[in-house]
Image (cartoon, rainbow, N blue to C red):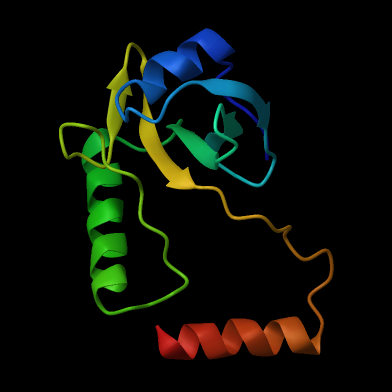
Length: 129
């Protein structure tokens, strides 16, 4: 797990212009992704977003992934956040060599140990899916 595409605040703000969300005041990389570069971005108004840069999928693959998330959202599956759309109505941004999605940031941490309670929650969630 790690960051595979290094990016700076100027590039993040250039990507955010596709969404008209204002500018970022800070960012930090996250280590929860296994094949993407993920950044927690704090916007000037205090909102937090997750900027994902794809490092292993093609644009058509990301588009298909977003279609699946859209269907899950349509059926009120609450564990499936949707990406923000760009000002042109697309869920995927393309900026120079970077492309990916921008999600609402969800606070939390991956479990360090999967105990019976966590396993049950995962099972219930998968059953609902």
